[in-house]
Every structure is written in structure tokens, then in C-alpha cells.
Picture 1 (cartoon, rainbow, N blue to C red):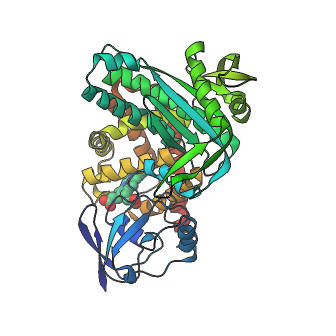
Picture 2 (picture 1 turned 45 degrees about the vertical axis):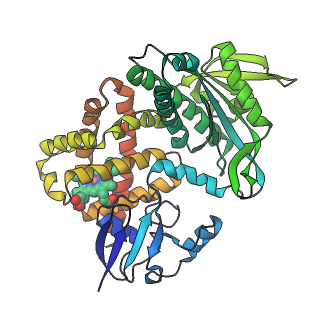
Picture 3 (picture 1 turned 180 degrees about the vertical axis):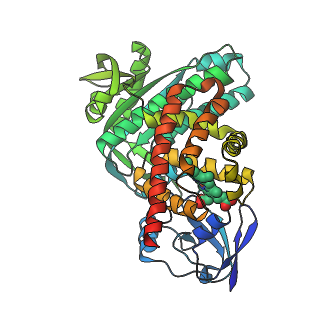
Length: 444
Ligand code: HEM
């Protein structure tokens, strides 16, 4: 017997066998992009859907799903697509569209109407020369710049497990570790985000602002400590809030970047908790911060001593995803030239396939900041590829074609370190996929 699943976002109806498949399987089978970081194991919450019609045509919640929905206080219409099996017609809406949105979900895990003390890293970023830019440009252009600035510079925060806490004029504030993580990870995530933001600004200056006779600069200050995190405010308008002395100190540290000329300054707490032997540290300062009596030791971060895989991947991802179709066209043209037999393996059209591939690559780069789910997701992807007829010998071919596509797509932003980073990342991705595929073969 067959049932119908209607996806409202794309207004597409697909048929599936009753009882045999989960809603997530229906999406994968029909090439409908549907995030599932943990590979459909009920461990993450990214495949969540809203059931608009036919809630009774699904199985009751599994224990795993119940635990997740209780913890996150979901209303009953929200279900985990990997845990619900289709018994009759349903109408659904996928709720998480991009990997960036996954990071915002951390806010769900903060207390509702009180603030709890949690150890977090706080990043303040302030843009320089902005007043000059405002004085020579109209308000319409300024709104455009601000949006570009917020988007480009906010992305590295999201990619590194952070939350964009607020935008205040030409200032961006990010927080790291609101839903847990070790001290070292939270501090390193914040430092990597800061480096990514500097890369992003360089890109804005080189590409989008090149005709405006303005070179934007910025300073970033990072602190680590116990702050109050929660949803506070009037009962009808509660807002995610982060309050406490470490937040004020982070803002003051940012202020010191103007005086010292350092691009990124971190406090001693960040320096001590971070994996500091991997960092290139420039000058250090002992400073009096306004409103504080004691002196603070601050350290200038210049970069990473060795290639930081995640930073390089994050830096190039932005450009790869800018024009997904262009990336996919070049990649598949090259692939079919080197391996003509591969063409027959693909059932869907290449444009659709390209969208799924880039969607998945974006997910992988974001998930590197929380690798616990990534391995599960990749093993499942490997099992799927086994079913698509993909053999082990195909993996290195695809890897090399991907690496050869990078210079064509990245243009002037291409650098050998990006190739090296993708090479290492693809080794990890493909090896994990192979592991998944082999586990399936062993079972059968
Ligand atoms: C970096 C590694 C790879 C990634 C991230 C990736 C990603 C994807 C994704 C997301 C899909 C959609 C279906 C699903 O989610 O299961 C897919 C399908 C597919 N992939 Fe891959 N893939 C990779 C490597 C390969 C390799 C090495 C081949 C070998 C030629 C391959 C061939 C295919 C085929 C034939 C399909 C099914 C297409 C269809 O049914 O029309 N992929 N891939």
C-alpha cells in the first residue's frame, strides 16, 4: 500500500510504501534536501519537521524522540523525521534549512525565564572607518554594506559553534559555549571565529568594496568567564540574554585593540584555556581597562602556527556556495570527462545532484565544529552510496576531481593551503563513508 507525503516548502508530493520507511528516508530517496547531521540516528535534532496534516498517520514518539522533544520543549506538531514512520498521507514542513540554522538551535537549550551561570567565551568585534564610509555613501548603500558586513562576519561565528548574540551599530557580539563544550573548545572556537572574521573582511575589501575607496578595518576582543545566560525580559517579549562582568571586560578588551593596533586581543583566561601552543602570539600587554581597578594581561593573536583545517575550509566554503550551480557544473563536467562510466550511476539531473552535494559539503564543514554527529551522518551516506552502485575505486577519482575544481571556482581567492585543507577533509569524509559502506557489506 502507498501513502503520499506533501512537502509544503517546495509544494512537492511523493509516494512511499506504508510502514516501511521513515520520513527522512522518503526525503533522501526523493532527493529532497533534508538536514540530518547524525545520519538519522535520533541523536541530533536537525531533521525535525512540523506535521501540518495527518499526525495520526505516524507512529507514536519513540523514547529517543520523546526525550529530545521534552528537553527542547517542542509543541506536539514537531516530530523527528528519522523517528517517524509513514502509515498514511501526511503534509509536512522541514524546519531547519541550513547548517547555519543548526547553531541557532543552541538557544533552545538555554533556560526560559531565568538566567543560569555558564562558562562561555565572548567575542566583541568593532568595525573601523565606518563613519567615513557613512559620510560618503547614502543611507541605502549603507544599509547594503551593513547587511553584507553582518552576513559575512556573522558566518564564522556560526560555523564555529557560536551564537550571534547581537549587532549594535557597527559592532557584532558572539558567544561560544552556551550549551556546553570544554573550556579549550569554547576558547578555540572563538579564536578561530575571530580569524575567520578577519579573512571575511579581507574578502569584502578585496571584492565588494574595491571600487569605493574605503578599506574597512576591525578589532576583536575575546574574554572567557562565568556569565549569566538565559531568556529574559517582559513575559511577552523574552530575549536571549548574556549578562555579567566577563561580557563587559570583553567589550573593554576590544576597545584596547584601537590603542594597541592589534587585530585580535585575548584575555589571560582565554590564553590559558585555549590550545595556546598552536597559536602565533604577537605582543602582550598589561592594561588598565576602563571601569576596572586591576591590570589585565592581554595577548595579541596573529594566527595559527600550522594549517588550521577548519579555518581554511570555512574560508573557501563561502565562495563555493555562492554559486552552487557553477560549482556543480564544473565539478560534474570534469568528473564525467575523467570517469565517463560515472554518468550512468546518477538517476537525478545534475543540477539537482549538485545542490545535494553542496548542501552536504556545507553541512560537513559546519559539523566539523561538533564532530560527534558527523561520523554517524557520513557512515549513513556511505551506506547509501553502496546502494547507488558506488565502488571504493570511485572515491579517489571524485576526490581528485573535487580538488582540481577548486582553482576554477575560487579564482583569485584560491591558495594552496585551501587545497591541502580540502584534501585532508575529503580523506576523512571518504574514509568514513567507506567504513559505513563496508559495515553494510559485512552485515549482508
Ligand atoms: C565527498 C564525498 C561525497 C559526498 C559529500 C556526496 C554527497 C551525496 C549526496 C548528499 C547525495 C544525495 C543522496 C543521499 O543523501 O544519500 C549523493 C548521491 C549520489 N552520489 Fe555522492 N557524494 C560523495 C561521493 C560520491 C562518490 C565518490 C561517487 C562516485 C561516483 C558518488 C556518486 C553518487 C551517486 C551515483 C548518487 C546517487 C545519485 C542518484 O540517485 O541520482 N558520490 N551524494
